[in-house]
Length: 148
Image (cartoon, rainbow, N blue to C red; front, top):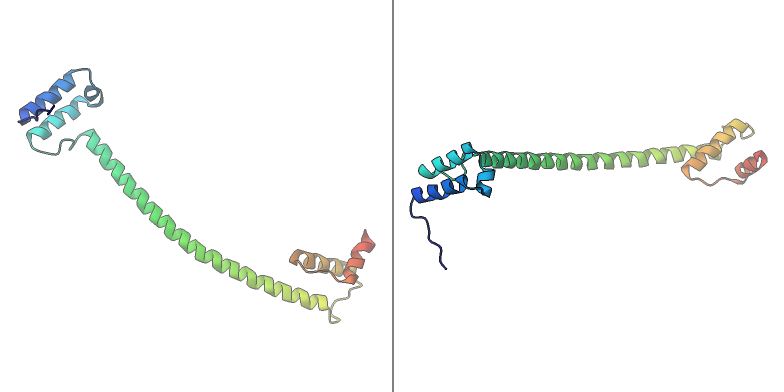
């Protein structure tokens, strides 16, 4: 069955007036001001919801959506900047570790600079080697066994 289309603004307005006067979803959801604005929009050939709270809510939602999109873009930009900074820090950390390892190797070789009979110095050398993942030599292992 084909539905009859409304032929005039007055017929359209009459449908909305009837809906507003009846216990309907339309009457529950539209305030008097929104209903009057909708009727005015029909008479003036404006978009139906223009100027109603529904239009305002939609506009606010769209603005918030745009703000969120802009925030997401800004955060992604910051994150990409942080990625580069983190990579730089990782590289610097590798360089520092290499320097510490080199100094530790120089210290472990001893070259007569460190008195390995000094228990405090030897204990510190062992701590440094263990924290850097170096193997201990026989003298260092013996030093630890003697202290257990």
